[in-house]
Amino acid sequence: MSNRSETESHSGEHHHEDFSGKLNWLRASVLGANDGIVSVAGIVVGVAGATADRTAIMIAGIAGLVSGALSMAGGEYVSVSTQRDTERAMLRLEKYELRTMPEAEERELAEIYEAKGLSPDLAARVAKELSEQDALQAHAEAELHIDPDHLTSPWQAAFASMAAFTIGALLPLLAIALPPVSLRVWACGGGVIAGLALTGWASAKLGNARKLRAVARNVGVGALTMLVTYLVGLLFGVTVG
Image (cartoon, rainbow, N blue to C red; front, side, top):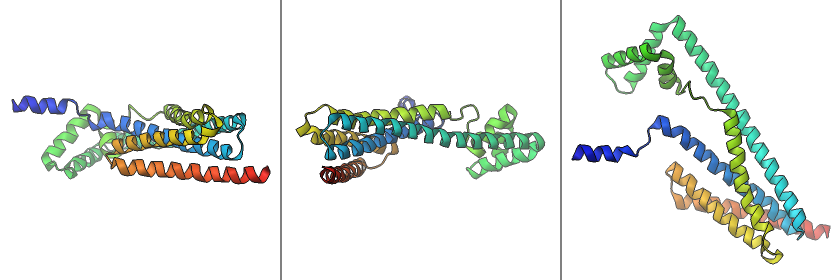
């Protein structure tokens, strides 16, 4: 009975190798959506403080959405491309070392497992068996913490970042465009606060952190951004008028 319950309790758990990559993607998506909300909210609220012209507000918001999404995508592409190039260089070096000094590399692998708590004899046997099966895979995972068969795609990262930013940016853009003029800023503020509360909760959930603190921090930063940009818009609107 106990064995069955233990099996059932572990059946829904995610292994690190399968879940860590997905967790990173989810966290990046949440942060991208959060950036989209705050960035475009600051733009449209600031413009709304300067003018009641819906067209001007929408043009500014759409420009912010497009430029922000492209900037996020470009930055993610460059960052992940650099990481991928570095990983490929490390794998090439590892291949060379495995080809020219296989015994030393096997001892190095055994030392890694010994440092993790295995006995010297068991660590040596594990290193030998893994090396005989796929030496590069074994060294890449244990020594470099890289899966050579699943390197991160720069294009995938770029599109994911762009999509997350766009989804987040649409919230303040629609929230300020649809309501009447008298409710425009308040509706946008309420929608943005709700969106930031959601992304703050999601980021805390993914990071196993305190949710209330994350939500308060997220909402506080977003509210301050909207307040400052709205006051700037009012100042320039009055001055220009």
